[in-house]
Length: 174
Image (cartoon, rainbow, N blue to C red; front, side):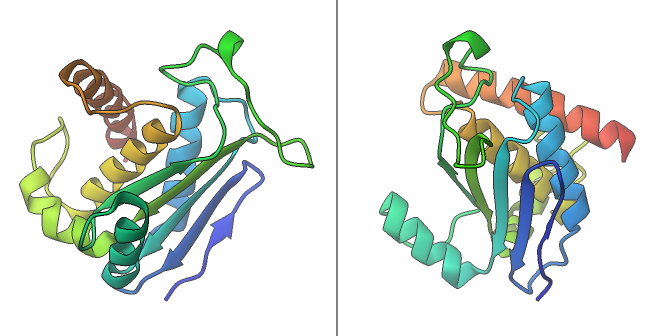
């Protein structure tokens, strides 16, 4: 298993699985880019943890009441400005050091690998690779931290549009 990496940007990446090789730097940069594009203040702390199927199944059962592993879970900690929350209306919480805390995202690369082929073409530029699927899951998780959801058709359309915009930017530079 690979370790984690963090930068001065407040993004922590932890890799606790061995199914898929993770480019920690790629996902740290991606999280920061999405947060910045959504108007979240620099330094807002966010963690992305990559886990195996068993750990994800446990988390899914404990927090969502669902059996088996899922591809991504998001655990918002504080309200940060994002697509659903204008900066003037936020109640950004801070840790004792003064940094805002967005929350935690947990991704299961093994589930992403199973879903990658089905995801091909789901967004412009999604080539069906595991990397593209994980990119999508990370962006999806960040948007959940910022208050976006997909329970209703209008919410789902708005979230999908934001995901597509962020992924288009990433994939045009990859």
